[in-house]
Structures are given as C-alpha cells and as structure tokens.
Image 1 (cartoon, rainbow, N blue to C red):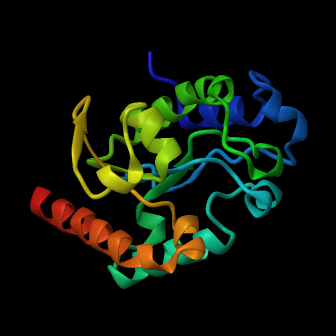
Image 2: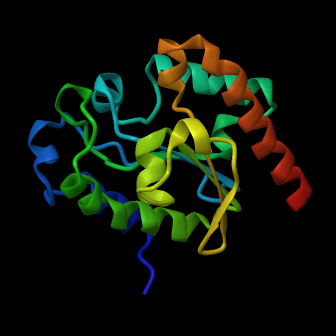
Length: 185
C-alpha cells in the first residue's frame, strides 16, 4: 500500500530512526511539485536548511536556482530532496546507517511523484541511487536507467562554489536533462 503525502511528511518530521534526529532543529523532507517530472537529490541539509526546514536554500541552493532559471525550469515545477532528511553534524557526509534509515522515505517520495528524470547532485546521492561504484568526476553527465527512471549524476552545486571550473560541466549536464525532458514530451 502506498503512503499518503501527509502521512509521509509526518513520519519524516517525527523520525528517530538514526542519531541525526538528536541534533536537528527540524527535518528537511524536501519541497516542490508532487507532480514533478524532475527530482533533484542532494546529500543532506546544511545549517540554513536545518534552520528553515527547506532544501537547497544556502549558497549552493542559490546557485541551483540560477542554473534552473537560466534553463527556464521553475523551481516550483521540480522536486528537491536529500538522501538524509536531518543535518549531519558539521555538514559531514552522511554515514551508511543514516542514509539507509532515510532511503525508504526518499523511495516513498519518488513513488508518489513518479518523475521521468532523477538528478543526483553529487557523489553521495549517486552512490545511494545508482551504486557504490559511481565516480562523480568520470561518470557525471552519463545517463543511467534504474527501475524505469532515467538518472543523471552530476556535480553538487557546492562543488562549483569550491571549484568554479566545474560550472561548464554542470551546465552541460543540466542542458542534457532539459533536452531529455523535452524529447520525452
């Protein structure tokens, strides 16, 4: 039986399945259109996201917004979520135990949305969505099909803030996503 959005969001907000809940201000379930054709998946909430309860609202989120806008993709038309729903201490990488506790929530979100395309923003989402063998630098921009979904691994916007040379690659990957979606219509 498929869970409702209301029930799922309540479960995420009250989750205590892993130790991350102990340090959260609030969980960050995700946001966007429940009918999105594209789902973007990041690693986990940062400080601003934890404070506001919204994904991708810090510097990396602003960069993501700019790229979407430049491609005429409205943020409210996509869905944005993370592998883990609570902020890891010090913004560290989520541990397997934490990611595995949250993945059923993400799978339920994807099942409710039924997107055409999933974009993994960075190595961590790619590891859990595509597989542990994925190497973001060499595999970014290459389409993968899993369980009926087209999946595109690409750089996390935060990586571009650290290394602006990656902007051209991210731009090309996002153009591929836009063009693939257009071909699917």
